[in-house]
Amino acid sequence: MRQILFNANIVNEGRQFAGYVIIEGDKIAEVAQGAPTEAVMESCERVEDLSGAMILPGVIDDQVHFREPGLTHKADIASESRAAVAGGVTSFMDMPNTVPQTTDTEALEWKFTRAGETSVANYSFSIGATNENIELLKGLDYSRICGVKAFLGSSTGNMLVDDKTALEHLFSAIPAIISIHSEDEAIIRANREWYVSERGDDLPVEFHPLIRSAEACYESTARAVELASRCGTRLHVFHVSTARELTLFSDQPLEDKRITAEVCVHHLWFSDRDYARLGNRIKCNPAIKTLADRDALRDALLTGRLDVVATDHAPHLLSEKVGNCLKAASGMPLVQFSLVAMLEMAREGVFSTELVVEKMCHAPAKLYRIDRRGFIRPGYYADLAIVRENPAGHTITADDVLSKCGWSPFEGTTMHYHVERTYVNGTEAYRAGESGSPEFLRGSITPSPCGRRLLFNV
Image 1 (cartoon, rainbow, N blue to C red):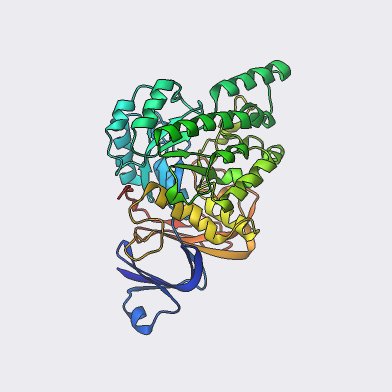
Image 2 (cartoon, helix red, strand yellow):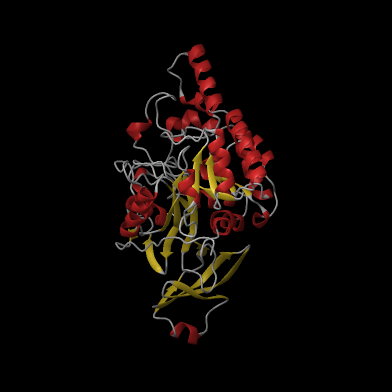
């Protein structure tokens, strides 16, 4: 089918312009400035007047935890991909800390098969590194896998890579991107023991960023960057959370880097001042830190030291988020509201809408060398987010949440943008409900699994 989206504000490749996009089958056929001619309109079976809404490339989230297999009481690929497309996220890369862990090809291919059966967004899955599986990782086809995930701090499970020989072998031998969770376990352990000895073991959440401290992040990241520099590794540091870590990265263009860095929406939005209001709802690893750290991260997006914005979407039930900072689960659901949160910061003048698109859409596509996604270009797959500004705003409630866990740290926050429609491979995967209705942000989602496996290095 040939369809046209016209009377739109297209945001793509550093500029905004009034124009239209024609979709033919699963790909973009034409992108043009101005109004379509009558002949162009007549050539399309489906005609959509967007009345000034923005067309953005679909967001590519390079770090999510969709919890399948093994943790499906709180999330699964079907539920979280639905939340993703409701947030304008058309592609995701899922992490390996599931049950069983994704550290061998059997577990990896199970996930790909499952996503093909259930996902309404495009998908890929990282394979996890351990001290023992480096030889396996060396032989994989990285045109069909987004890369390797290594935990350099025991954030979750037992996937900590702490053998120095294994780590050097990993950094030297793998041709793909190695993404890391970077916190120093020895520093975290020492901090925990000290605070427990001084204050007891019923520590409130405000102690979380003191235990998983800025020092723990910096020391681990500094060692990883030094090793990657020696080994020529394509290193990608996930969820940078401190100002000090930024000194380890370059502000060169992304295409010229072998060491890159990601920041997550929650580290750009929240600071340690929000613990008093939100408590364990914003407890995550690495921890949300000071206002000065948050502001430094925002500035680093502008200078290019931070390359990609993602979510680290990590759902838990609210019942798992209770207790002190040593017991409450770390992580929060973010994929449904990540784009609108970034656009809200753009609205406040923190950065531009064009930069949001660069860091959430273009940069992941360039970094992972994804085949024909991340841009609004003829011949590229028609992965698009239609976003409308709402001057009156909409205050997010739990009823708006599509993640299986049923809550969001953005509840009570008024956003002035909403995703009106999302296209995945030319299929309308999501359409918002009527403004003011109970189904406004839950909308309607295609029942068919229209997502596809991402391809890389093409």
